[in-house]
Image (tube, rainbow, N blue to C red; front, side, top):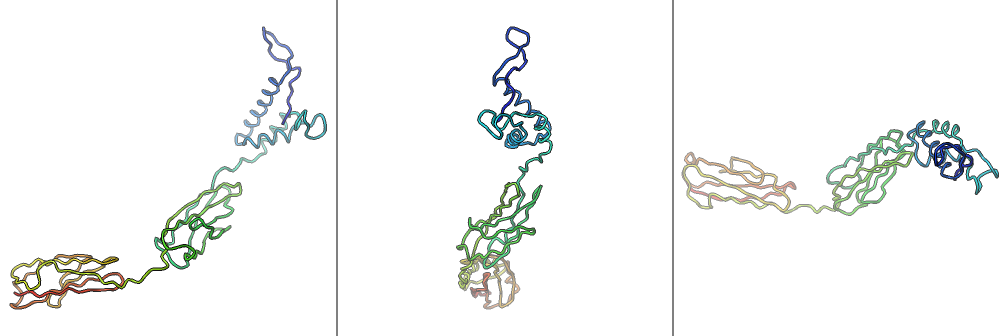
Length: 273
């Protein structure tokens, strides 16, 4: 690839003293020394840059141009070091990138925002949904419109990839749940009054317990005595009723449970004081 002096090299010889010797054992360290000088002038040089500079600054000897005897030519230390000083450091730093989830559960067309930065400059940002390219943006702010109908309902990964001019890249991932085909909830919760029993005779402090369940989730439970609201809870509640203050005769205890879809159910019992 390159040639270096290896004939009549004045150096130490076996048995002591100095003398002229020949061979690649002497041209190799000369080349290594030039490389060391280049790296001293520019420590950021990459191996490929070192090779390129050695070849481009070599003295063309022998047949003009590259040939089988001298390769690119004879190394020129002064020109190689001068060229090394003028080479900009290679950009090996990847951009930073972050994708923001448009929500934990998404449907329809949603906006996906990505932030990206680089020590030199971001050239483009790509957005992928479930491994499929959605779009590419080349200017900040990086904002994408994603039609979630392109993915089946369920968990989908959103991946943003940022690139710089040197080809360095990095990515950021978030997971979202696509829910475009949601069946309306028309099932009401079930509600139960655990205590007292229907038709029971009560007196003194009466502990009333209410529990409810739903196919999705119970959002509220309410307790009424003789039509008056006495207590509320999430999916269950307990209430202490002082029956001594109630009139003698029959009294109505009613529990109402509701879910997020607005479905409601009622459980009513009567007790005697």
